Image 1 (cartoon, rainbow, N blue to C red):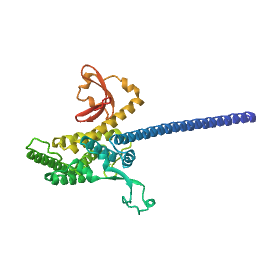
Image 2 (image 1 turned 90 degrees about the vertical axis):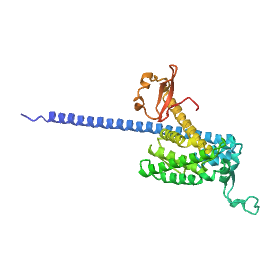
Image 3 (image 1 turned 90 degrees about the horizontal axis):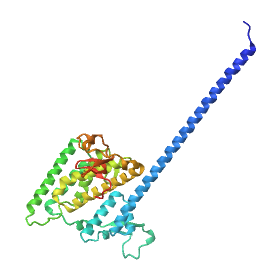
Image 4 (image 1 turned 60 degrees about the vertical axis):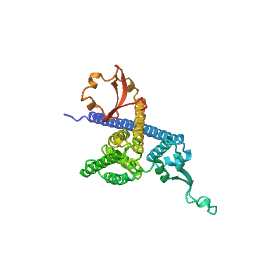
Length: 358
């Protein structure tokens, strides 16, 4: 068989051309894939940027609302903003003080003042240029006096409760030591109740049973316990929640669980500051959850018109097993109607009416 040089060269050319075409096609596919990936990343980045912007706007709005509440309760705007710089916890405490003062005829706003740091009032010889900028001053002693003195009969119990709570903050709810301390704390509550009952012979309200420090540590301790169950914790010094990112719904539900537990253990003792602090925690948490519900409805308007759960399904004992905390569902109401609620899973507070104000 003779060798055909022309055929060989033609075949080689065709083969080389096919290889080049395949390489060009592969390069084009790689280019398209790269562009698609870049477009996807750009889209995700824009979505993340919008989400962060929306979160900043929501946080800024919530902050302004808190500041507005303090101003409405009589605190000067510059003082309210100074309080806000210390965090959400500081604002909640201040609002609690202002509300309590208003309800009891005391100008609690006067206990929060702004002034030059490092300057003595009336000291004209002091060089004002060397002073620090105006800072916030809080008259803690006056605030304690506003809430009223705690009877000496409870002082020892208060100190023990605070000591127990401080120890619990360093433990997790699963620790045996935590359970032991909790039993001791409940026993102290029972003792306080027994003392109060023995003293109450006139039928009049006895007044305060817990010091301000005991109230704060008790509420913070229970909040921290519920947060730990959700993989978070509370930093007492900074008054912030650790591990909050992406878990705001869970954090507010934890606060509601804490309020529920605190009510069951301290409500019968009828201490005004303890009751007011627990109520403030509950109200604030419900408000935050309703804001989250409004956000979800804005992003997913079809949730408003979802089909309601049938009464038969709602009454099934395993119905709630399929729900996630923070989920919006329509449940049946008396009279054959339905309402949109957020599932919480809190004993005694399983659902939150997202359109109610209580």
